[in-house]
Image (cartoon, rainbow, N blue to C red; front, side):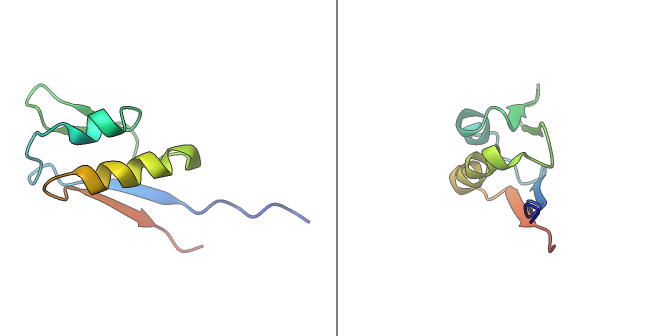
Length: 74
């Protein structure tokens, strides 16, 4: 019996909506950084499974909901 493949999870950020709070990079520094203008920089659009919880937390902490998570159907 083979192990089930992990679902593909994607992260997206809305740069226009970003308010430069930096909450995402504080909560999930492996996934987010801030550019010279203070706006969010996404380090990877396809986070590994061990970073999903951090991605969800960063999305929850974003004061303008500029972070979106999507799970692709299998």
